[in-house]
Length: 434
Image (cartoon, rainbow, N blue to C red; front, side, top):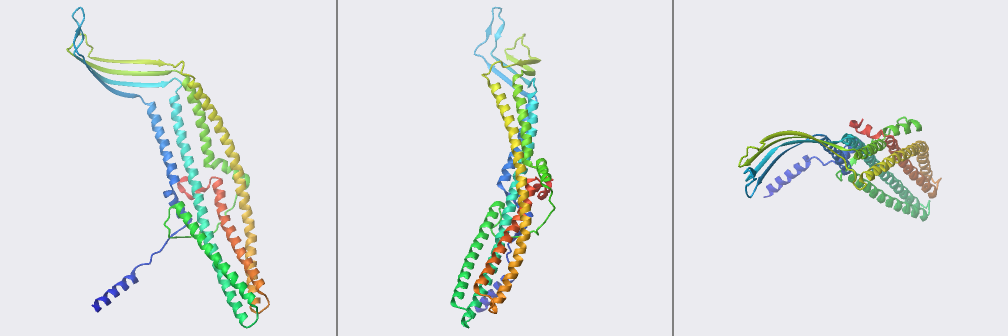
């Protein structure tokens, strides 16, 4: 029994030794883009709208095609009837069958207008899908940088906790030899407790931002992020950026197509005031029981029909007025969005310029704060600086680290934002949209 237990323990130990450790998945920003496009419900809904638009084109194509129908009519009468000359006028039963070809269209050719509208509607759905993808991927990037910023903030609080722990220990040693008062130690312990609270907040903040990224992209809870190196690409002037946005923004292009659709809708509504022309051809066979010498057993014929509704309660006029109102609304929406985009580009441009300039000074401030803390720390060790000097230097260092961290990630996000507002973001991150 003892030998068996030893053998079992050895097997378990070997199994644990050779079992590969579980690693959390690591994602770059490009990986998150790809996963978001595959899993996002909003994008799936927009793709469904595109498929519906493509289906409407098939329906419009069917309206242009002639209709071929087969028919069969059988009738059973209760009795035979004859006229005065004893000729059969009602048999026991009759049957007619054949095929009929019908084509009907308006003399305004509004059916072709409707077909053209479906093609523009498909184009609009594609542009709407691109705009939704672009906005969603920017949301992914924002969540990505929020996680990195929260992680960096946790590192800052951890470093602060280590510095304050070291300072507290130094204050305790100096109190024992009588170089400082107990107030210095109490101040150090108070600052250390505050740093511990800040670390807990930072840990919770990191957990919250990761949860938000999980929700947006659809990741597993256990993951890590690969940070992309900061890039500083040359930027066009503000007028050039605005002109690029006017020509490349998917949402503006979508409204431009919407204007065309509204114009076509007016043309389609005008077509209701035109008559409709119908063309038909029929092949028919007949039989009856009892048979009759005058029965036409087979016939083929064609015909034309012209219909025009003179009065329908004002429906056509109301539909035309509605189309004209929508056409004017589409023009106004396009003009309004163009102005909004111009202001949006200017806002993001100025924000990015501000972030770039501010980051230079914040980096200088961080370097100064680091050197200042190291100098004050050495002076405190030899008794040339007091506890207030150390706390002030540490507070400045923590504040500088946080400001620089915040500005660095906001700048990275602003660089993506400038691409998004000019319509270049999706083409850059999704090759098939180029």
